[in-house]
Length: 490
Image (cartoon, rainbow, N blue to C red):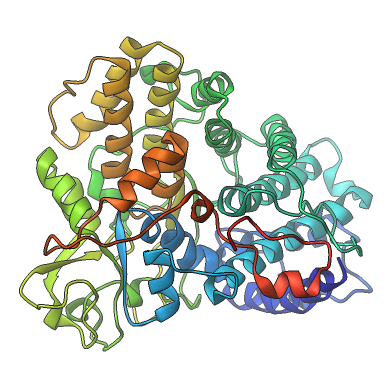
């Protein structure tokens, strides 16, 4: 992995510098890794904590997590149009992307850089023997947190590209081959089960991984792998008794849906894992999402909601989640009108779940895992396992929060569609729609995407094929690594 190793070395330096300048005090008040030298680093418990801070900060600083995961999960699906003025984003939206796409390349590199920061912790912390760890399991917890972080990076890699290189050490110096997706899932399973065994029920600090976060990611991973029996098991380990689970993390739904995104309820009882953003951390997501009237800038606006999603909210009578998800304004609010809202006469649904731009330095956190997701995932697992009657009350619990009536679906097939739709309305713009569609079925996804129309009723002509359900391996990586192969069709 010589090319990845050298790139990680240089980009880790950047990441650690970012960690020094942007580390939230909610993570830890210990010195960030960039202040430590090679001669004294990874010698003490304090060094281990600082290295872990660097691994967490990959979520706050890498562009994948401040922007691209939403584009991949929502623009590529039926929830968002690319908007803006970037031709690279347009190709992701209309499925004309190729292996030279710079966004695809950036995503690959970001995720492997994040894995590199986690691997640095996992390589070095086992060799530390510090009296500060006597009588407690903090050393094991650090390793569990790092394994959770690594598994989350691999979740996105394997669901985006399929077979990908499995890199388990920052010291690896070989040219990696692609590892079958099944082996990636097996490693994720091992990492997350270890995390489950050592992590605390309540976080050691805001934004830290917990047993509940590990179990939630296990549930999502098992669902994506088609193992609904284990998915159900781990959903129940997260959920409290009111939702039929045995979870001890104190999780619950927030009574008011909009509170999830108002910046006044960070790390709430519904949140299982969220990216911490604080003053001084430069971010740009909201600035490129919100209309001119909320940002006072002239930047083109990306990831605007599709006509299809807006109509889905209206058909359901779901004004609560629609207005928490989108801010409607005329396209004349921006200098660059977001396609396909070109006429300037239709209210544009601007992405609104990350809503405080604060001049490119938003302090809004981003929730990556939350309880409503796991409630609906449990319903999906129950229904897939033939326990449809038990799944229906879970759908209704989610609907009740936003004052919607109980679902009318009763058959297994109708309940499956009802869950897919409920997940869409509940979790729109949170990055998971594409994976939800793929889990429902490749042919369903292809047929759905190829049937979509723009706000004027004109076919979007996506021409989605089986090959385009996965991204291509970046050509730049293949040029550097002779052992990498390309996905079919690219």
